[in-house]
Length: 195
Length: 365
Image 1 (cartoon, rainbow over the protein chains, first blue to last red):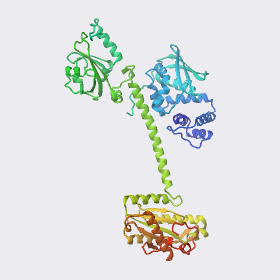
Image 2: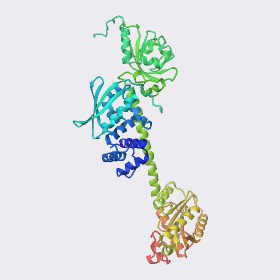
Image 3: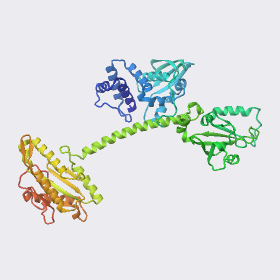
Image 4: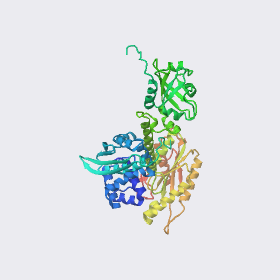
């Protein structure tokens, strides 16, 4: 697994529950270090162990935890850079949804060895979509649910999201757009502040 | 079309074309036959906020950097079809790329031209300077993807840079550890080899003093290893105190040390330093109610005594001098001289000094 994924989980736990909890999770996963390096690769099994140790530590179902990770990635100021990169997907939430198919390719453009699950958007009606998520990271669909829910907020759209389980080997997510411009979202300036 | 003749447009077609161009090329300009702007795409109004755009002469707002010309309509028309390098004359002086095509005959304005502009590589600063958004670019324009890429790569590079810093820190620590004798904190044999190689390469003169403790085995035997370790640490401290910060003090064996004193060519000074060191090392050292008595023997060589310093030979001759010091009764310093006997030429039994400090490392004996 790419270090960025493990690092994201780590940041989520540290920023949400504190370093004590994170230390406990890593010990629970049987690991002797406490920090993931974003630019290194790790065995897939390590991510698996960390996530299960995390769910056990928080005493919550893993899907709920994964959804929170997705929400965190868009909404926490410590990972603002990622939110910005996601917002390049389009000026409205609807356009962002349509750019989802490109998301793994966009990720690869930034970090060549980062492999994300394939995402595919299907439009069933004007305000009714489904997103399929296919890859070897089981449960990633739950992260996508949290991510899309937070992004809808970010764009100022009102959307209902639901994980519909696995169908034909892909996780299915249902997106119902109640209002594309429900509230004024957070601003997105094309120009990065630091540049 | 056989010979490029285009049928005259329907009335109002120029306005319809301009409206289409606003969508396809939001940074296009229509020039009149005299080189004045008659129409501009919506994004250009953002770039020239507060400036009257329509009716202005193109050459007054834009400097044509290449191809060089006087900015007249004739010069502009001569550049038709090729890449133009432009710069906005006022404000942020943004660089632009452009391409011009003449309007076909019969199209208004008569004898005019159409220029499409783009930011090229300056897009990153331009979006900031002009507060541009995604909708200021044509839907097919790659500008937003380029901005994404710049930002994504910057973030990835930053993550890599942090990793490099951490790895560098770990590498320095590992190297430091590899060059340090962990008991005394002095340099080790590996570090000594490195320092000597560097000095030889730089043709830098130095003095090399090989020191061996006397009666150290007795400390280990009577006080145990803890006492021995304590004495070694005290010896190390004294050696560091008696040398300059640029000198190298290395522990190269159990109770063997090598001092490398840079830029020293005076045998008298080397002897002073060695004698002072031996005097201090001969002072009793207390450890846990025990008083440890040791001393030290030393042999030295000077690189300036060799026409071409050979490190192996220098080490060997310093050993010879050290051996001689041991033989002459220990607790003294002997500089190497050509008439000293080489230990290698003597039988093994004679080479071992009679103080029976068993377990010695064999570089000297």
